[in-house]
Length: 244
Image (cartoon, rainbow, N blue to C red; front, side):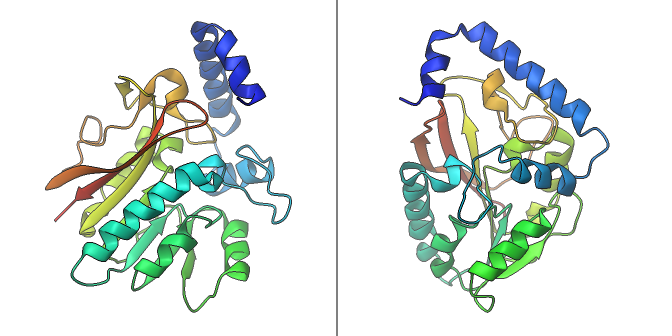
């Protein structure tokens, strides 16, 4: 057990929730007039999710922990290779690309997008540019690239409800959406609003339910692809939505 996890185990839950709500309010004040590019550039610059001394960008345990990444990659391999035609994949919020590079072999074309310009440039220098189309993109405000399958892995959990609503309104263009969210292990209050930034809903007993208001995302079919425990508590759930 990490020192952080041990501390959580002895601190009353009410105090933990109060602290998380305070951090959310502070984030809202700090980034009130900032763009998503500015917000998440600062998140990486200050190593909110971790510090990769080798490359300077780290998307956190969700991108690095083999116990989390391995089952996810295997679930996507199984699904993508089950399709009659190898699909074009659009990776929204590709982060440090540690996960995307492992999914890439199972796609025909692969477009990897992130809102942080320096992160995309770093990814280009470490990846075969002919094999992956890296793009700087604010998924809430910019048009989304064409493709068959969209993956959004532990990204929406960092966005406000207003930003998520914008994303949900645009992903109907894809055949499938594969969305991963960090959630409490038991029941939760869906879709509590938070400011876009480094924190997530799980700390205040919430998580995403895209079928529920205010999103009410339409889909033809939904099923769970992958569920793994998180070292930070709770579970990381990957859900497949057939959109058309």
